View 1 (spheres, rainbow, N blue to C red):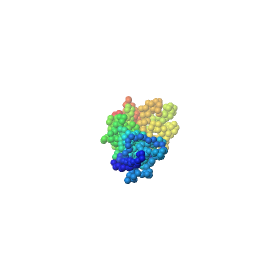
View 2: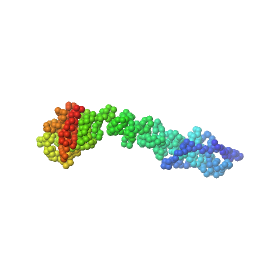
View 3: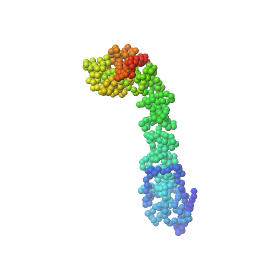
View 4: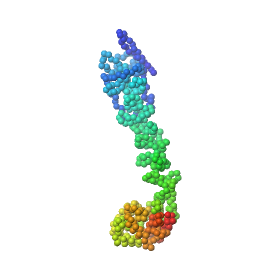
Length: 560
């Protein structure tokens, strides 16, 4: 350390003596601990301006140690070490009340008004802001303080191109802690005291601090200083396992903290979920490891041991959740091989035992006219409106309409008691038959539907004893009529069965008079009954459609 000597005259008795002082120039600053590439942020709130100490109300703290090191502008500007009568331009000298016997201040002194501590050397303070090693304020050893014009600073302070925090009680620099600033915001200060940015490890986990505002980032997915992306939660901690964000769920590896893509992983609560190529949780069909799986859109869990339909065709998901071909659909395809090339065919069957739905549509999403099978819906809506209490005339019309497929009877019931074909939308809406549309121009036979939608109506009659749409009396009445159709109409889904509930429909609306041939109903078979609906078009003659429906009926009965 470079030292320079200064001399000062003092009077002892009648003699003048020369007293030599040694001053050590201390220039060590906080920059020793800060990286040179750190740049200050212009919009960082600045610490409050510290008021000047009062020179008329100063409390002196006794310090037994002799002050041997300081830096003054006077020593630098007086290379000859000559005494200076003028006050140094870069210093502050307190004024004593007793000008006759003035003693220069040395060491730490606290202003009683502002409670601020200032360090003096021979009544002078250094000018400007610096990080210096001084005797401690409590008088025990030395330590480093950030001072401005000799006054010690606290709170968040800007220095050497970054920010530091100094404890308001001890005035010492705070390292590796999350503290509240003088303006209320919280900041993280690192191992070297500098304000932290981006990913920082603290208190057993990791946090992220915005490089612009220095504030902690909560509930966001951000890029680290080394380029990798991480999720930080509501409390700022780095996220692991399943985490909800941006309207969906993601999974973050507990070891690497990185987002997991295209993998099936176990959550923190034990359930397993699939996460896709974009990291989002999967719902619906998903291909993984050479197989296709289905994940429930509500629970996100893998579906196992169930039949589900996609694009007009049902599939079976086995015990492992792997999608398999529906065996019943495979039988249907074998039967209609070649037929479906020239015809649209819609097939749906629902087991009464397990509720499983088997479905096939030669063209996914295609709908066909109902023809006379819509008469079951006409009767169901009439019974709903009357709570099952039909007068004798209505009963006669209903009998003719179902048993004999009388069109005139259907016209009267629709027009007089239902208010027209368009009003039949009420039953379709009530039963969730979203693919069924009333026939245009009051043509009830031209109502468009699908086989799967027809199952909803059939199950309301045959499989739902607690129906909110039809009471027990109404359900039994429909069954009685569908079990006693005319002998010439006992074809279709009844093939191969001795007991059945049936309604057929057949129409040729225009030249070249190809037939729509449809058949719907229920096959009891004890506790292993099932509802079934088959719709076909482009049949010439009509018997082509009848034959294909009956082949499907026999195959289905044998499978179920």
